[in-house]
Length: 427
Image (cartoon, helix red, strand yellow):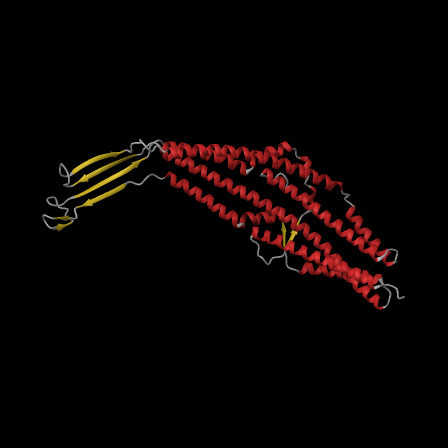
């Protein structure tokens, strides 16, 4: 039998890996850290921009509330004098016209109460903006880490696929020489096709995730994102260094949705004050001049108009405002309960994930890499079968994917704590 030249196979394998790396470097790509992505997100995200416009609209409502009612002016002239048979006469003997100037004066402090209500509306809009930013930022960071660790897993698939292609090519040559059995070729092809299918599915998932990042940061659709996560970013995260009570206090202080619920009560209370004030009638003062329509000629009069609150005392709006206060308090209690449960659950999950992560031997992956060299040597010397060789590669893939999944869950737990506390507890 002609000996299987595994040294040639290894040399080809190294050359292929080098060519793959060079090709990857040659491809145009955008290096993007999470900090870079967040900066682009804050500046370019369309949802945030639209929400900011709503905040600006709320500020415009304050301007409107500060304005006084405009005075009203009226004028009336005789259309046709049947005695003189003339139109629109204004002379002192046969003409007639009347003019009036009026001004509405709001009582019970309605204007100031409207200003306070509009100002509280601005706070509501601002907290809605910050809560949207909190939610979208968590989505961005979670998607970023998922994409990054999936990209790392894709590299493992690519390495295995390339090595199996070389192995298949070498064994097909040996099959022609009668040195290997057809069943070995079928096994290699079966594993190769399986890996290629999984790899293609993973690439589709990565493309979908990158699309989300591009949409949130307004990066061009055809950009190739090379995501970067530094070792310090992974090593500096230590959830057990933070106490649950501190996280809860931070959430109570900074969670925008909690502040939104509190401000909602303040808005309802201000609205109740306004509706009670609206029950007080407003006064309209007027000044009138009448040329010849009354006694005496050239009549000048001053008037006042005041509705009598016999039937409509704004009872319905006052009741609605009171109900809104009770509703707001109920919403606040619910929001406080949600906040406490989210903080506790996120903190407990982070500690469990951290414990599992630290339970893994830090040298495990490097030992696996060293072991693969020995496995290749043993396969070359026919000390292990093809099936054992393939089983090792499958175990190597499973271990790497599991570790990448665990790393993602760990970093996502970090971002979830930042999300539920409404702050950057962990950077």
